[in-house]
Image (cartoon, rainbow, N blue to C red; front, side):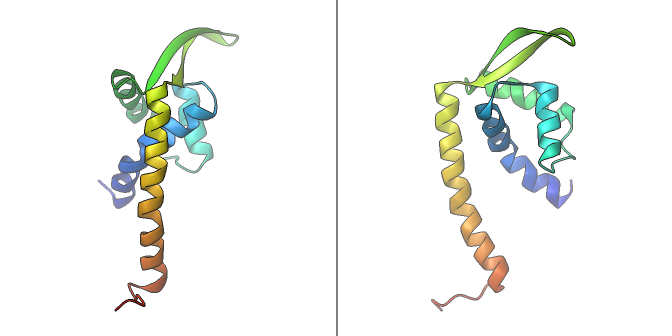
Length: 113
């Protein structure tokens, strides 16, 4: 598994929750949205199992809706628990992102040593 894949695996759930929070989304559309944001290496095969897990954890709910372009589609939306989980992800992401960016920018130098 590549380094990018390993890093992405850790943040994909938060990305998916954020996209679904913006508007109800179906699986294939979610794949397209991730690609639009530059995550073209995320396959549908990895999205659907994650959607199932998020449903089991009651972070999202799916409802079947008519589609003008074909069969009904399952649109996902966040539950209250999913919104809380997204908020927690965003807090934890910031807590990790800031120090990592500082380390990468300064090459590990700190003013505290």
